[in-house]
Image (cartoon, rainbow, N blue to C red; front, side):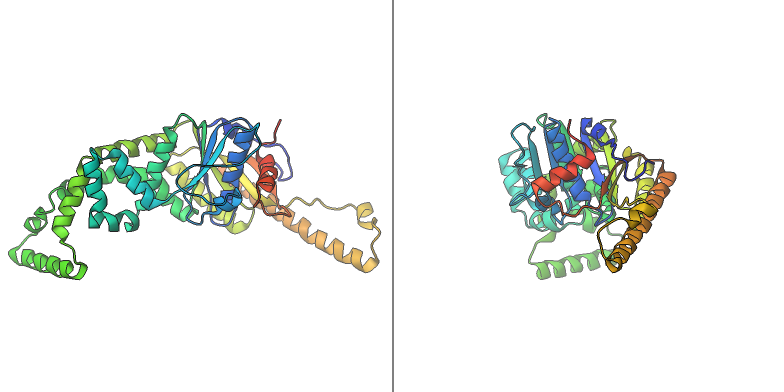
Length: 368
């Protein structure tokens, strides 16, 4: 792995990809890197979109946008840049849009949207955010307008669920559970003994009184409305799964040199490899690179002796931390064999303005 202060970068090669997926643990600057890659791509004349699936919504701040939603928001870059759009996942609105787009008729779509089970499940069902992220990514990748799509994933623990969503959905839709749900009235009949059927019937009545819903009737209507759309869900899940593993897709591991972040990055890299995702390399953020001062440099300066002593002590601390950063990044390289795509130094300003983000992007892909 190259030295952290090495200004050469391999990140520009990433901009020729069709899909970039930024992954990493929380607090390492993953959203900033995703936003900066989008900015760099636009500055390199690539029509791009950057979308965040991170519920923290830091992308809005990183791009200095007044708001962020499922609709594309144009990032106000210079006129000679290619267009860059930014957007964020809204599970409920995306679910509704999928129903309206893929339902066989407007009447079926309205029936699904009015169903009480749908209204509860579309926003609160475990995993629905991941499935809608998959649908959103599918819609983006189908648009020829974008030459590059950059994805900002949630922190690594939730990113695992996000990346597994296409496979899980495909397995679910092919399972017997969906076949069974197509005939929810069989729920009682499938229950083993007469006593069990009585108990199940009593339980359903209690639940109906408690929820105010006719569970079986609502479930039947819900499944009936979705039945014609199941094949489409399965097809799109399979396409997203292929895109995530295509040669035109690259995963970028974002980390800081902190030992805990490095350990998490190594663990996550192994999981990505086991799932056959292509990891292009590492972007290291907040890297210190203070070389050792020679004796002459230590003696120079107009400061008073007491101040010089304090300054040298502070510098010595930064040099020690720089050695630690170099060591942890070497450890990461030895464990993964991944190249260092870019090392972004610890910056004195937070990249929470477009101008600051452009300066950050220059560390990833210098212009010209």
